[in-house]
Image (cartoon, rainbow, N blue to C red; front, side, top):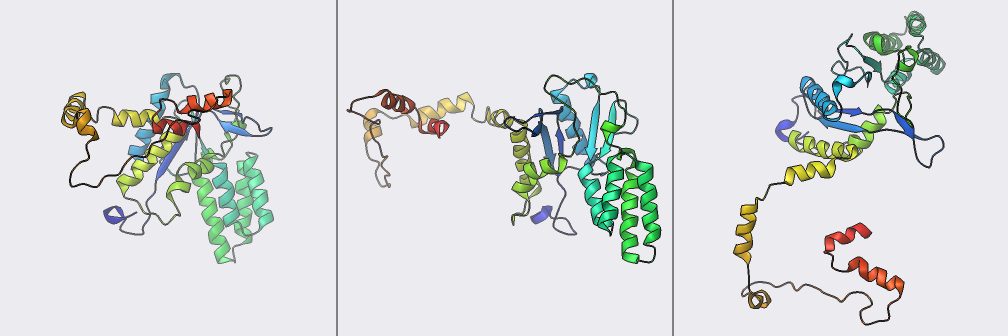
Length: 305
């Protein structure tokens, strides 16, 4: 962060991001590739309560929330992400990537880390805690290793309700439309990286809260497919019809005045050229090229790059 928005301790400030989607579909042209369907996102430097309201508003903007039968909330364990426990049709799952990463970081032996991850992925939560308790006993004399295992134990215990993958909970999953399917939910970290991190982090940049939030709005609107719609809403009415009429009257010139060189000013003549193949025999291909640039303003030509 920069300037007055820089925290009193450190230089960083957390940006929250939420991504919603309806299921998975096959990725075109890839035999084993999948992508999420109807992805939408929102992000910003909000307080937890305010961001949760923004998140819920984003969902309500797209769906009739009264008709949503099932919602799986996947997150890294931050308290603001968790839904109200016991809320009908809403379930929390601790993100598989964060589970695996935390285990690999905190368990000293790689074989033991793989075994613990295997138990957690299979939904054997009780066995996983028993195994982790045995590791705590084994490393009692190693103070550094014991502290790491203790930290891992507390992380998993604080998110115990989300450790079993939702596909292994025996939930009554609604039937999805043709072409969509249920899969694991390990897309969170990759999506956060693609949408926010690659553009805003680790590039010797610093942000004001307002500037960072505005860019985050643009980035999430782009991935949600609403960028141009939102930009049109922002700029619509910036110049009213009345102001436009006044401006047209103020700059209206006669043909003679328009061609007259202004006094005491630098003139930058506009380069011009005839249409391609002017005065030459036209083949069908040449006609097509002439039609592309005929009666078009320069900004339209970007469409043909």
